[in-house]
Image (cartoon, rainbow, N blue to C red):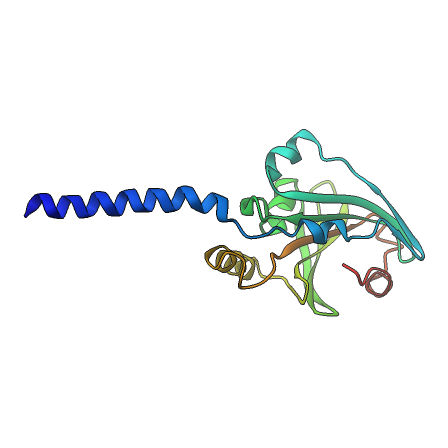
Length: 193
């Protein structure tokens, strides 16, 4: 009787190991095609690619990243868009990285985008330097700001092998000149984000 009980556990263990091994090959589609659709130039704006440094490559791992510097009406900004389909751990609340770089939030609010919200943070370093960042998670039909929602969405996608919806992208916008940057102009000019 004892042997029969132990063999059930071995079968269960081998089944789980087998399924776990196969799971790697059953990953849902990535959002890489959506990254390629982000325009490099358009009416009233242009951009240039910013290469990832070695530290960025280590942090992002297998995640696909677009990093560009845009110039146009409403001021210039640095855009970083991350597809965490292949490395979900590379996508997290941007506040962690900002605080790690010495920035502290001094004001926070949400701003309305066409299909949801973006989170706006005004930041300051101990040196007195000031900056601003907008971020949101984006699917083709929805924008949201909660990291917990991102984790829930991506976990559900993995469990359903992508049937529950598209992979959210993390979109981070950092204005380069706070004096010239206009939220309203940004929303009109870069609605494709």
